[in-house]
Figure (cartoon, rainbow, N blue to C red):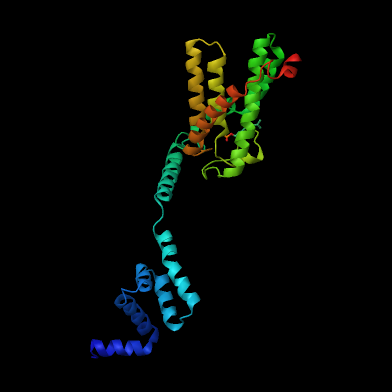
Amino acid sequence: MPSPRVSRAANNAANPMNKIEFMSLLTNRTNSSDPVSVRHRASDSPVHRKDSFNSTSSTSSQQQQQQQQLPEEDCMKLNPSFLGIALSSLLAVDLWLSKTIGVCAREGSSWGSARPLMKLVEISGHGIPWIAGTLYCLYKSDSNAGREVILNLLFALLLDLVLVGIVKGIVKRRRPIHNRMDMFATFSVDKYSFPSGHATRAAMVSRFMLNHLVLAVPVRILVMLWAIVVSLSRVMLGRHNVTDVLFGFFMGHMQYSLIEYLWLSPSTLPALFRM
Ligand SMILES: CC(C)=CCC/C(C)=C/COP(=O)(O)O
């Protein structure tokens, strides 16, 4: 049986690269006072070890410069930032929670029998009934104050469609894979899910109604519940992830504040109110 020393020597003779690589590691360790070798030692990644072999076979200054840059690149790959980890974790929780809540995503899902009811809730927050209803109220309104409020609601609904379309087009987040795309009347950007247009509309319209209509307390509670149910139904139907709806709800509130700021009135836009 050959001794370990003899077999190692035989191995090195068979594969000279082993010996060279071993020597290059040794050189890096022994020259610890040399700043360049300390830098080399900073990375023990296989990529870098391969490069230290190259440095022994070629010593051009360009390659040395390249080697000095590599450890920092390696660090970036091996140590992702805290923000990166936090975002990936949030995404994982979002996907898991959305799949868990998506109990009406299919007829065969655990709450599949409630799907037709959820689709009615979906239509109650759709843009077409809201725009058509607002136009009808505008046509029927006989007071200037009423017309002003309804015109601003129409403006808010149109602005919502534009802003949601822009954000969806920029973010381009796909709808959840468990969603069945059987939605009523959609635009091309509605293949994207961030943010939920139903959630923005529900938040904005409910705030608008609570602030500009005189409503009895039970009706006010119903309006708030409607906004919550419309938003929740988006995840239950599998149309959206939780973060799409949460951001949509927040964006709807912001849109309402924008409408308040841009409020159209006979003094700011007299031509619109002369009709
Ligand atoms: C066709 C019109 C006037 C509006 C489209 C409304 C719609 C389908 C929005 C998408 O909502 P989600 O982003 O919540 O799925």
